[in-house]
Length: 421
Ligand code: HEM
Image (tube, rainbow, N blue to C red):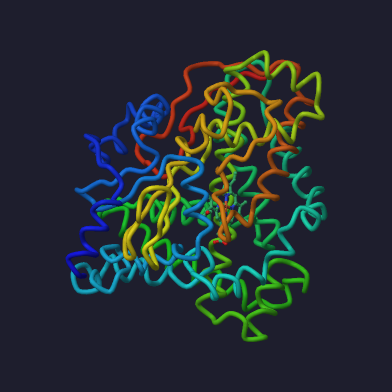
Protein backbone atom coordinates (compact mmCIF):
# COMPACT_ATOMS: atom_id res chain seq x y z
CA UNK A 1 0.00 0.00 0.00
CA UNK A 2 1.38 3.45 -0.91
CA UNK A 3 1.90 6.12 1.74
CA UNK A 4 -0.94 8.16 0.28
CA UNK A 5 -3.32 5.17 0.36
CA UNK A 6 -2.35 4.47 3.96
CA UNK A 7 -3.02 8.11 4.88
CA UNK A 8 -6.46 8.04 3.21
CA UNK A 9 -7.34 4.84 5.02
CA UNK A 10 -6.28 6.27 8.38
CA UNK A 11 -8.48 9.34 7.78
CA UNK A 12 -11.53 7.22 7.07
CA UNK A 13 -10.99 4.53 9.69
CA UNK A 14 -13.88 4.16 12.12
CA UNK A 15 -13.22 5.90 15.39
CA UNK A 16 -12.05 3.75 18.26
CA UNK A 17 -13.20 4.82 21.70
CA UNK A 18 -12.24 3.40 25.00
CA UNK A 19 -14.33 0.23 24.62
CA UNK A 20 -12.79 -3.07 25.61
CA UNK A 21 -14.88 -5.01 23.11
CA UNK A 22 -14.12 -8.63 23.92
CA UNK A 23 -14.27 -8.08 27.66
CA UNK A 24 -17.63 -6.39 27.22
CA UNK A 25 -19.02 -9.03 24.85
CA UNK A 26 -18.21 -11.80 27.28
CA UNK A 27 -19.28 -9.98 30.45
CA UNK A 28 -22.27 -11.83 32.02
CA UNK A 29 -23.73 -8.55 33.29
CA UNK A 30 -23.63 -7.05 29.81
CA UNK A 31 -25.08 -10.23 28.30
CA UNK A 32 -27.96 -10.27 30.77
CA UNK A 33 -29.01 -6.78 29.61
CA UNK A 34 -26.86 -5.42 26.77
CA UNK A 35 -29.10 -2.54 25.71
CA UNK A 36 -28.00 0.37 27.94
CA UNK A 37 -24.35 -0.20 26.99
CA UNK A 38 -25.12 -0.76 23.30
CA UNK A 39 -27.17 2.44 23.22
CA UNK A 40 -24.33 4.36 24.86
CA UNK A 41 -21.74 3.04 22.44
CA UNK A 42 -23.93 3.63 19.36
CA UNK A 43 -24.35 7.26 20.45
CA UNK A 44 -20.55 7.64 20.32
CA UNK A 45 -20.48 6.40 16.72
CA UNK A 46 -22.50 4.04 14.49
CA UNK A 47 -19.27 2.21 13.51
CA UNK A 48 -16.32 1.46 15.78
CA UNK A 49 -12.90 0.06 15.06
CA UNK A 50 -11.31 -2.17 17.68
CA UNK A 51 -7.50 -1.88 17.30
CA UNK A 52 -6.94 -4.92 19.53
CA UNK A 53 -8.86 -7.39 17.34
CA UNK A 54 -8.81 -5.23 14.17
CA UNK A 55 -12.57 -5.84 13.88
CA UNK A 56 -15.17 -3.25 12.89
CA UNK A 57 -18.35 -3.14 14.97
CA UNK A 58 -21.44 -1.74 13.28
CA UNK A 59 -24.22 -0.43 15.52
CA UNK A 60 -26.16 1.93 13.22
CA UNK A 61 -29.20 0.74 11.27
CA UNK A 62 -28.30 2.60 8.07
CA UNK A 63 -24.67 1.52 8.22
CA UNK A 64 -25.55 -2.14 8.86
CA UNK A 65 -27.97 -2.27 5.96
CA UNK A 66 -25.43 -0.69 3.62
CA UNK A 67 -22.86 -3.26 4.68
CA UNK A 68 -25.32 -6.18 4.41
CA UNK A 69 -26.32 -5.21 0.87
CA UNK A 70 -23.03 -4.25 -0.76
CA UNK A 71 -21.31 -6.80 -3.01
CA UNK A 72 -18.03 -5.37 -1.69
CA UNK A 73 -18.57 -7.37 1.49
CA UNK A 74 -19.71 -10.95 1.88
CA UNK A 75 -20.07 -13.89 4.22
CA UNK A 76 -17.17 -15.96 2.92
CA UNK A 77 -14.87 -15.68 5.92
CA UNK A 78 -11.85 -16.85 3.93
CA UNK A 79 -11.71 -13.17 2.92
CA UNK A 80 -11.15 -12.22 6.58
CA UNK A 81 -7.37 -11.98 6.38
CA UNK A 82 -6.77 -13.00 10.00
CA UNK A 83 -9.78 -15.25 10.47
CA UNK A 84 -10.08 -18.94 11.34
CA UNK A 85 -10.53 -19.99 7.73
CA UNK A 86 -7.99 -17.60 6.22
CA UNK A 87 -5.03 -19.01 4.28
CA UNK A 88 -2.81 -17.48 7.02
CA UNK A 89 -4.49 -19.53 9.72
CA UNK A 90 -3.91 -22.76 7.83
CA UNK A 91 -0.31 -22.65 9.07
CA UNK A 92 -0.96 -21.13 12.50
CA UNK A 93 -3.86 -23.26 13.70
CA UNK A 94 -4.56 -26.14 11.30
CA UNK A 95 -7.19 -27.82 13.52
CA UNK A 96 -9.38 -24.73 13.76
CA UNK A 97 -8.77 -24.06 10.08
CA UNK A 98 -10.06 -27.57 9.22
CA UNK A 99 -13.10 -27.15 11.46
CA UNK A 100 -14.19 -24.02 9.60
CA UNK A 101 -13.13 -25.16 6.14
CA UNK A 102 -15.23 -28.33 6.43
CA UNK A 103 -18.22 -26.15 7.30
CA UNK A 104 -17.42 -23.63 4.57
CA UNK A 105 -19.10 -24.88 1.38
CA UNK A 106 -22.72 -23.77 1.83
CA UNK A 107 -24.88 -20.75 1.09
CA UNK A 108 -24.39 -18.91 4.39
CA UNK A 109 -20.61 -18.90 3.88
CA UNK A 110 -20.59 -18.20 0.14
CA UNK A 111 -20.27 -14.98 -1.82
CA UNK A 112 -21.77 -14.25 -5.24
CA UNK A 113 -22.17 -16.05 -7.60
CA UNK A 114 -21.98 -19.30 -5.57
CA UNK A 115 -24.33 -17.92 -2.95
CA UNK A 116 -27.08 -17.29 -5.52
CA UNK A 117 -26.57 -20.68 -7.11
CA UNK A 118 -27.18 -22.51 -3.81
CA UNK A 119 -29.81 -20.20 -2.37
CA UNK A 120 -31.78 -20.47 -5.63
CA UNK A 121 -32.35 -24.17 -4.90
CA UNK A 122 -34.38 -23.37 -1.78
CA UNK A 123 -35.76 -19.87 -2.21
CA UNK A 124 -39.18 -20.84 -3.58
CA UNK A 125 -39.71 -23.68 -1.11
CA UNK A 126 -39.09 -21.31 1.81
CA UNK A 127 -41.23 -18.39 0.65
CA UNK A 128 -44.32 -17.47 2.70
CA UNK A 129 -46.76 -18.97 0.20
CA UNK A 130 -45.00 -22.37 0.06
CA UNK A 131 -44.76 -22.35 3.85
CA UNK A 132 -48.56 -22.41 4.08
CA UNK A 133 -48.40 -26.07 3.06
CA UNK A 134 -46.55 -26.81 6.34
CA UNK A 135 -48.90 -24.93 8.65
CA UNK A 136 -50.84 -28.06 9.65
CA UNK A 137 -47.59 -29.82 10.64
CA UNK A 138 -46.57 -26.86 12.78
CA UNK A 139 -50.01 -26.74 14.43
CA UNK A 140 -49.94 -30.46 15.12
CA UNK A 141 -46.49 -30.36 16.77
CA UNK A 142 -47.60 -27.36 18.79
CA UNK A 143 -50.74 -29.18 20.01
CA UNK A 144 -48.73 -32.23 21.03
CA UNK A 145 -46.48 -30.12 23.25
CA UNK A 146 -49.34 -28.10 24.70
CA UNK A 147 -51.13 -31.32 25.66
CA UNK A 148 -48.12 -32.19 27.82
CA UNK A 149 -47.90 -28.76 29.52
CA UNK A 150 -49.16 -28.97 33.10
CA UNK A 151 -51.42 -26.18 34.40
CA UNK A 152 -51.22 -24.33 37.72
CA UNK A 153 -47.65 -25.17 38.60
CA UNK A 154 -44.33 -23.70 37.45
CA UNK A 155 -43.07 -25.03 34.13
CA UNK A 156 -39.63 -24.41 32.63
CA UNK A 157 -40.88 -22.98 29.34
CA UNK A 158 -37.69 -23.48 27.33
CA UNK A 159 -37.43 -27.23 27.99
CA UNK A 160 -41.16 -27.81 27.89
CA UNK A 161 -42.01 -25.85 24.75
CA UNK A 162 -39.63 -23.31 23.16
CA UNK A 163 -36.71 -25.70 22.59
CA UNK A 164 -38.60 -28.77 21.35
CA UNK A 165 -41.19 -27.07 19.11
CA UNK A 166 -38.95 -25.71 16.30
CA UNK A 167 -36.75 -28.79 16.58
CA UNK A 168 -39.66 -31.20 16.08
CA UNK A 169 -40.95 -29.09 13.19
CA UNK A 170 -37.53 -29.23 11.59
CA UNK A 171 -37.33 -33.03 11.94
CA UNK A 172 -40.77 -33.36 10.32
CA UNK A 173 -39.91 -31.02 7.42
CA UNK A 174 -36.71 -32.92 6.71
CA UNK A 175 -38.34 -36.38 7.02
CA UNK A 176 -36.14 -37.30 9.98
CA UNK A 177 -37.44 -39.96 12.42
CA UNK A 178 -38.21 -38.85 15.99
CA UNK A 179 -35.60 -41.29 17.30
CA UNK A 180 -32.97 -38.82 16.02
CA UNK A 181 -34.37 -35.97 18.14
CA UNK A 182 -31.76 -36.15 20.89
CA UNK A 183 -28.52 -36.61 18.89
CA UNK A 184 -29.49 -33.94 16.36
CA UNK A 185 -30.33 -31.45 19.13
CA UNK A 186 -26.90 -32.16 20.63
CA UNK A 187 -25.09 -31.74 17.28
CA UNK A 188 -26.88 -28.47 16.55
CA UNK A 189 -26.00 -27.07 19.98
CA UNK A 190 -22.32 -28.04 19.63
CA UNK A 191 -22.05 -26.69 16.08
CA UNK A 192 -23.77 -23.43 17.02
CA UNK A 193 -20.56 -22.31 18.77
CA UNK A 194 -19.00 -21.71 15.35
CA UNK A 195 -20.98 -18.45 15.27
CA UNK A 196 -19.54 -17.16 18.52
CA UNK A 197 -16.18 -16.05 17.00
CA UNK A 198 -14.44 -16.85 20.28
CA UNK A 199 -14.44 -20.58 21.12
CA UNK A 200 -12.71 -22.56 23.84
CA UNK A 201 -10.58 -25.56 22.83
CA UNK A 202 -13.25 -27.89 24.29
CA UNK A 203 -15.98 -26.19 22.24
CA UNK A 204 -13.86 -26.58 19.10
CA UNK A 205 -13.37 -30.29 19.78
CA UNK A 206 -17.07 -30.83 20.44
CA UNK A 207 -18.01 -28.83 17.32
CA UNK A 208 -15.61 -30.93 15.24
CA UNK A 209 -17.08 -34.18 16.52
CA UNK A 210 -20.66 -32.93 16.10
CA UNK A 211 -19.84 -31.80 12.58
CA UNK A 212 -18.53 -35.19 11.48
CA UNK A 213 -21.39 -37.13 13.12
CA UNK A 214 -24.09 -34.77 11.83
CA UNK A 215 -22.69 -34.80 8.30
CA UNK A 216 -22.37 -38.59 8.31
CA UNK A 217 -26.00 -38.88 9.41
CA UNK A 218 -27.18 -36.42 6.73
CA UNK A 219 -25.20 -38.35 4.06
CA UNK A 220 -26.99 -41.59 5.03
CA UNK A 221 -30.32 -39.81 5.23
CA UNK A 222 -29.85 -38.38 1.73
CA UNK A 223 -28.86 -41.81 0.42
CA UNK A 224 -32.24 -43.23 1.48
CA UNK A 225 -33.84 -41.74 -1.62
CA UNK A 226 -37.15 -43.58 -1.31
CA UNK A 227 -37.88 -41.73 1.97
CA UNK A 228 -38.02 -38.30 0.34
CA UNK A 229 -40.83 -36.99 -1.86
CA UNK A 230 -39.63 -34.89 -4.79
CA UNK A 231 -41.14 -31.68 -3.46
CA UNK A 232 -39.73 -32.10 0.09
CA UNK A 233 -36.69 -30.10 1.19
CA UNK A 234 -34.54 -33.21 0.92
CA UNK A 235 -36.05 -34.10 -2.47
CA UNK A 236 -35.22 -30.60 -3.74
CA UNK A 237 -31.68 -30.87 -2.43
CA UNK A 238 -31.13 -34.22 -4.13
CA UNK A 239 -32.55 -32.98 -7.44
CA UNK A 240 -30.20 -29.96 -7.33
CA UNK A 241 -27.22 -32.22 -6.67
CA UNK A 242 -28.27 -34.59 -9.48
CA UNK A 243 -28.49 -31.62 -11.84
CA UNK A 244 -24.97 -30.54 -10.86
CA UNK A 245 -26.14 -27.32 -9.14
CA UNK A 246 -24.47 -28.31 -5.86
CA UNK A 247 -21.60 -30.67 -5.21
CA UNK A 248 -21.66 -33.35 -2.48
CA UNK A 249 -20.12 -31.18 0.26
CA UNK A 250 -22.43 -28.25 -0.51
CA UNK A 251 -25.43 -30.55 -0.49
CA UNK A 252 -24.61 -32.01 2.92
CA UNK A 253 -23.62 -28.71 4.53
CA UNK A 254 -26.69 -26.84 3.29
CA UNK A 255 -28.99 -29.55 4.62
CA UNK A 256 -27.16 -29.51 7.99
CA UNK A 257 -27.55 -25.72 8.13
CA UNK A 258 -31.24 -25.75 7.19
CA UNK A 259 -32.01 -28.37 9.86
CA UNK A 260 -30.05 -26.24 12.37
CA UNK A 261 -32.23 -23.17 11.70
CA UNK A 262 -34.51 -24.34 14.52
CA UNK A 263 -31.82 -23.20 16.95
CA UNK A 264 -32.67 -19.53 16.37
CA UNK A 265 -36.43 -20.06 16.22
CA UNK A 266 -36.42 -21.18 19.84
CA UNK A 267 -35.16 -17.73 20.83
CA UNK A 268 -38.19 -16.10 19.20
CA UNK A 269 -40.52 -18.24 21.34
CA UNK A 270 -38.64 -17.68 24.62
CA UNK A 271 -37.61 -14.06 24.18
CA UNK A 272 -40.98 -13.16 22.66
CA UNK A 273 -43.05 -14.64 25.48
CA UNK A 274 -40.83 -12.93 28.04
CA UNK A 275 -41.40 -9.54 26.37
CA UNK A 276 -45.16 -10.13 26.47
CA UNK A 277 -45.00 -11.02 30.18
CA UNK A 278 -42.85 -8.00 30.97
CA UNK A 279 -45.31 -5.70 29.19
CA UNK A 280 -48.72 -7.00 30.36
CA UNK A 281 -50.72 -4.19 28.71
CA UNK A 282 -49.25 -5.22 25.36
CA UNK A 283 -50.06 -8.86 26.10
CA UNK A 284 -53.66 -7.95 26.93
CA UNK A 285 -53.97 -5.94 23.74
CA UNK A 286 -52.70 -8.88 21.70
CA UNK A 287 -55.23 -11.21 23.35
CA UNK A 288 -57.99 -8.77 22.51
CA UNK A 289 -56.78 -8.03 18.96
CA UNK A 290 -55.31 -11.19 17.52
CA UNK A 291 -55.05 -9.56 14.12
CA UNK A 292 -52.02 -7.74 15.56
CA UNK A 293 -50.11 -11.04 15.78
CA UNK A 294 -47.90 -10.54 12.68
CA UNK A 295 -46.88 -7.09 13.92
CA UNK A 296 -46.34 -8.43 17.45
CA UNK A 297 -43.98 -11.10 16.07
CA UNK A 298 -41.95 -8.43 14.25
CA UNK A 299 -41.74 -6.41 17.44
CA UNK A 300 -40.59 -9.45 19.43
CA UNK A 301 -37.85 -9.96 16.82
CA UNK A 302 -36.83 -6.31 16.96
CA UNK A 303 -36.96 -5.91 20.72
CA UNK A 304 -35.16 -9.09 21.80
CA UNK A 305 -33.44 -10.52 18.71
CA UNK A 306 -32.03 -14.05 19.00
CA UNK A 307 -29.06 -13.51 16.64
CA UNK A 308 -26.82 -10.87 18.16
CA UNK A 309 -23.78 -10.78 15.86
CA UNK A 310 -23.95 -10.74 12.06
CA UNK A 311 -20.58 -10.89 10.28
CA UNK A 312 -19.37 -9.65 6.92
CA UNK A 313 -15.84 -9.95 5.51
CA UNK A 314 -14.44 -7.28 3.19
CA UNK A 315 -13.90 -8.39 -0.43
CA UNK A 316 -12.95 -4.84 -1.49
CA UNK A 317 -12.60 -1.59 0.47
CA UNK A 318 -16.11 -0.45 1.29
CA UNK A 319 -17.14 3.12 2.07
CA UNK A 320 -19.72 2.76 4.82
CA UNK A 321 -20.98 6.21 5.84
CA UNK A 322 -17.86 8.21 6.75
CA UNK A 323 -15.76 5.12 7.21
CA UNK A 324 -13.86 2.83 4.86
CA UNK A 325 -13.95 -0.82 5.89
CA UNK A 326 -10.86 -2.22 4.16
CA UNK A 327 -10.75 -5.43 2.14
CA UNK A 328 -9.70 -8.35 4.33
CA UNK A 329 -11.36 -6.98 7.48
CA UNK A 330 -14.12 -8.51 9.52
CA UNK A 331 -17.11 -6.29 10.37
CA UNK A 332 -19.77 -7.39 12.81
CA UNK A 333 -23.30 -6.01 12.99
CA UNK A 334 -24.57 -5.81 16.58
CA UNK A 335 -28.27 -6.49 16.16
CA UNK A 336 -29.23 -5.39 19.67
CA UNK A 337 -27.91 -1.91 18.85
CA UNK A 338 -29.13 -1.80 15.23
CA UNK A 339 -32.70 -2.71 16.21
CA UNK A 340 -32.86 0.12 18.72
CA UNK A 341 -31.25 2.84 16.62
CA UNK A 342 -33.30 6.00 17.25
CA UNK A 343 -32.36 7.22 13.77
CA UNK A 344 -34.65 4.45 12.44
CA UNK A 345 -37.12 3.63 15.24
CA UNK A 346 -39.23 6.01 17.29
CA UNK A 347 -39.09 5.33 20.99
CA UNK A 348 -36.84 2.32 20.34
CA UNK A 349 -36.64 1.04 23.91
CA UNK A 350 -40.42 0.62 24.12
CA UNK A 351 -42.00 -2.75 23.30
CA UNK A 352 -44.90 -1.80 21.03
CA UNK A 353 -46.82 -4.56 19.24
CA UNK A 354 -48.52 -2.01 16.98
CA UNK A 355 -45.23 -0.63 15.64
CA UNK A 356 -45.33 -0.03 11.91
CA UNK A 357 -43.16 0.17 9.87
CA UNK A 358 -40.72 -2.13 11.64
CA UNK A 359 -37.63 -2.64 9.49
CA UNK A 360 -35.64 -4.53 12.09
CA UNK A 361 -32.51 -6.55 11.30
CA UNK A 362 -33.22 -9.68 13.36
CA UNK A 363 -33.03 -11.72 10.14
CA UNK A 364 -29.99 -9.83 8.82
CA UNK A 365 -30.19 -8.11 5.46
CA UNK A 366 -29.16 -8.06 1.81
CA UNK A 367 -28.73 -11.25 -0.20
CA UNK A 368 -28.08 -13.38 2.91
CA UNK A 369 -31.24 -12.34 4.73
CA UNK A 370 -32.50 -15.39 6.61
CA UNK A 371 -34.02 -17.88 4.18
CA UNK A 372 -36.03 -19.46 7.03
CA UNK A 373 -37.77 -16.24 8.05
CA UNK A 374 -41.24 -17.25 6.79
CA UNK A 375 -40.97 -20.55 8.65
CA UNK A 376 -39.81 -18.78 11.82
CA UNK A 377 -42.62 -16.23 11.59
CA UNK A 378 -45.23 -18.90 11.03
CA UNK A 379 -43.90 -20.97 13.94
CA UNK A 380 -44.14 -17.87 16.15
CA UNK A 381 -47.67 -17.00 15.04
CA UNK A 382 -48.97 -20.54 15.46
CA UNK A 383 -47.27 -20.96 18.85
CA UNK A 384 -48.39 -17.68 20.43
CA UNK A 385 -51.96 -18.08 19.15
CA UNK A 386 -52.10 -21.66 20.43
CA UNK A 387 -50.75 -20.67 23.87
CA UNK A 388 -53.37 -17.93 24.20
CA UNK A 389 -56.18 -20.16 22.92
CA UNK A 390 -55.27 -22.86 25.40
CA UNK A 391 -54.53 -20.79 28.53
CA UNK A 392 -56.43 -17.88 30.05
CA UNK A 393 -53.55 -17.13 32.38
CA UNK A 394 -49.84 -17.09 31.49
CA UNK A 395 -47.61 -15.70 34.24
CA UNK A 396 -43.97 -15.52 35.25
CA UNK A 397 -43.30 -18.10 37.98
CA UNK A 398 -39.76 -17.00 38.91
CA UNK A 399 -36.77 -15.05 37.68
CA UNK A 400 -35.84 -15.73 34.02
CA UNK A 401 -32.13 -16.35 33.38
CA UNK A 402 -30.46 -15.30 30.11
CA UNK A 403 -27.62 -17.18 28.43
CA UNK A 404 -24.51 -15.40 29.66
CA UNK A 405 -21.88 -17.67 28.14
CA UNK A 406 -22.06 -16.47 24.52
CA UNK A 407 -22.27 -13.19 22.66
CA UNK A 408 -23.59 -14.31 19.27
CA UNK A 409 -27.04 -15.44 20.36
CA UNK A 410 -29.47 -14.14 22.94
CA UNK A 411 -31.80 -16.61 24.54
CA UNK A 412 -33.08 -17.89 27.86
CA UNK A 413 -31.51 -20.60 29.96
CA UNK A 414 -34.30 -20.76 32.50
CA UNK A 415 -37.76 -19.36 32.07
CA UNK A 416 -40.25 -20.43 34.76
CA UNK A 417 -43.85 -19.84 33.68
CA UNK A 418 -47.24 -20.80 35.17
CA UNK A 419 -50.16 -21.56 32.89
CA UNK A 420 -53.81 -21.58 33.98
CA UNK A 421 -57.21 -22.15 32.39
C1 HEM B 1 -36.37 -16.47 14.65
C2 HEM B 1 -35.69 -17.35 13.94
C3 HEM B 1 -34.49 -17.01 13.11
C4 HEM B 1 -33.62 -15.95 13.21
C5 HEM B 1 -33.64 -14.81 14.21
C6 HEM B 1 -32.65 -16.11 12.15
C7 HEM B 1 -31.61 -15.23 11.90
C8 HEM B 1 -30.76 -15.31 10.82
C9 HEM B 1 -29.72 -14.36 10.51
C10 HEM B 1 -29.39 -13.13 11.35
C11 HEM B 1 -29.10 -14.77 9.38
C12 HEM B 1 -27.90 -14.09 8.70
C13 HEM B 1 -28.38 -13.05 7.72
C14 HEM B 1 -27.28 -12.14 7.21
O1 HEM B 1 -26.12 -12.52 7.21
O2 HEM B 1 -27.61 -11.02 6.80
C15 HEM B 1 -29.75 -15.98 8.95
C16 HEM B 1 -29.40 -16.69 7.82
C17 HEM B 1 -29.89 -17.94 7.55
N1 HEM B 1 -30.89 -18.61 8.23
FE1 HEM B 1 -31.97 -17.91 9.77
N2 HEM B 1 -32.92 -17.25 11.46
C18 HEM B 1 -34.04 -17.84 12.01
C19 HEM B 1 -34.65 -19.00 11.59
C20 HEM B 1 -34.20 -19.82 10.60
C21 HEM B 1 -34.80 -21.07 10.21
C22 HEM B 1 -36.07 -21.67 10.80
C23 HEM B 1 -34.02 -21.59 9.22
C24 HEM B 1 -34.19 -22.90 8.50
C25 HEM B 1 -35.02 -23.08 7.58
C26 HEM B 1 -32.93 -20.65 8.97
C27 HEM B 1 -31.93 -20.84 8.04
C28 HEM B 1 -31.03 -19.85 7.66
C29 HEM B 1 -30.10 -20.00 6.56
C30 HEM B 1 -29.90 -21.21 5.67
C31 HEM B 1 -29.40 -18.78 6.48
C32 HEM B 1 -28.34 -18.41 5.44
C33 HEM B 1 -29.03 -17.66 4.31
C34 HEM B 1 -28.07 -17.16 3.26
O3 HEM B 1 -26.87 -17.07 3.50
O4 HEM B 1 -28.55 -16.85 2.15
N3 HEM B 1 -33.07 -19.60 9.83
N4 HEM B 1 -30.76 -16.29 9.84
